[in-house]
Length: 321
Image (cartoon, rainbow, N blue to C red; front, side, top):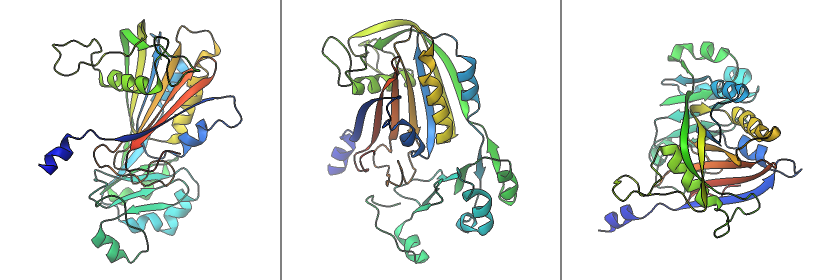
């Protein structure tokens, strides 16, 4: 009965919301993107937009490549040749793939050259390394993302494969959108919706859920928060793969300049999800799966260059920076 009761519990999470402006000297938007290393999915939504600009379209299509390396022994990541060719040049990321962070041995390489090992008890004792116990109950293929064509040559003996992120483009018609006011991220009754309400709504939009609260719909009875407005069409782009923070910075920069010319859109959003089984979320903060494995962030960008930044992790993770 205790097990069933735990399964019925709604997964908890930590959500941090902050408001700033891209023009402020102390704006943290770039550093928070750069320190979220292992990104699985990037989505942006533009209300009142039917055709994507050439600049945004090109950026969305040019977020790769990344590489799969099968059966790679760990010592390859600390060999002098690998360190000199990739680590010392910066912007080299790696993550074990198809592992469960709370059960399996997991490895992540950060762009600062640090190698994060999340090991089960037996493996940890065999290595003879010094570390600290994970806050999680327990603990193959490696994914890499690095600049330059030499990655294929360096790991040729391990069956390396080059992949490109998958890009899905779509137009959503007659979309009911929350009314937002940049000065009120907490929302105001009958005036504007809050940041958490928007984040929940975005999840429904990205999932393709119906938003009409139809009682006969057995999948979802969710509806758009109020107040809301209906836009004739909205453009949705979703990129899935192993996506570098540098590429996300370029997308964010392009989206913040979307309003350089007058637009009908009141705001645009950029949402980023990290790999659920990455051993870290931001910087070197330990990350676990538990019931959800989420570590994500979302920008809401307004025409006056104000933005909301929402960062979420599981309740057992450290608070987002």
